[in-house]
Length: 347
Image 1 (tube, rainbow, N blue to C red):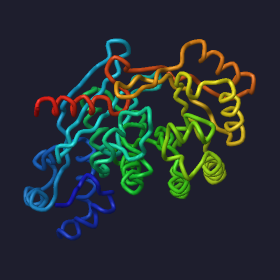
Image 2 (cartoon, one colour; image 1 turned 90 degrees about the horizontal axis):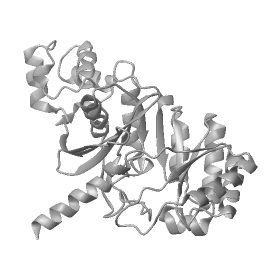
Image 3 (cartoon, rainbow, N blue to C red; image 1 turned 30 degrees about the horizontal axis):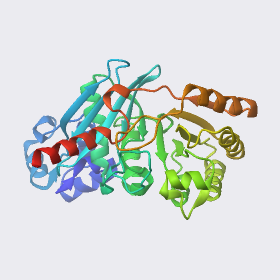
Image 4 (spheres, rainbow, N blue to C red; image 1 turned 120 degrees about the horizontal axis):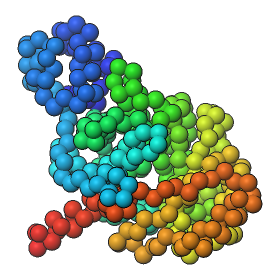
């Protein structure tokens, strides 16, 4: 079966030609798909005969809502969606002054093994296809009741480990005849795969690239992030410098503040130097506690001392506002809860 929602308009045109239909039908179908229709009969401007052809050889992807949790503190909404094969992924919608931002997952599970993250517990199950990522946006938007203006690829999974599908998804949401979300309103977060960063630069997408750095030195970063082993901060730095040179787009370094692990003044100084060399912006993130992990967020004193070093160095940084802490908004937490409950029920 042809996965219609994963097709770009020009690919839909080619599919119409195969079916013996005029190319303009592709534009109609693409418009319906990006409006979130779930059945071919909802495509009311298509002839009944074409709808039957589509029903016989194509499919419209869909999600089933398993859980919805809304923060009483800040209105953040977290969704747990069931995919067509029974696997589940998480999506979060957050409210900012500039509009509604959706944080989507790109894989079921993750192979990167970051020591502080719930997403990677259990490893990688599979990657999502473009239609499934698009559904995260469409279904969350429909439930939230407001148009999504910004997309963050920062949920479960490593986007650059699912490169082709992610790039196609980005082109789908960017199309003017579809959701028309500008690339400058999209951020992609990666643990820092140099080859993937180079490939992304070659795509010339004008999105915001965020590097999950979390430590400025190899010893600490390799303990926190196994993907750093065999690569190193120096190679990552060069990849970031090359990305900036190729795109002119400033990179953001994400830095989760972990008590006693990466929050010393010496590490702040090293981070400031790295940010200066790469012209990066630093985003300090108060760590969200994960039940299965031993880490705790840095205390107020540590945070102030760390920021003081960055201030003295003239580092451009922000401290991210913590959202959704009361709804398990950190990546993978809601999915892990479901898995634990299913195991308990099966015992």
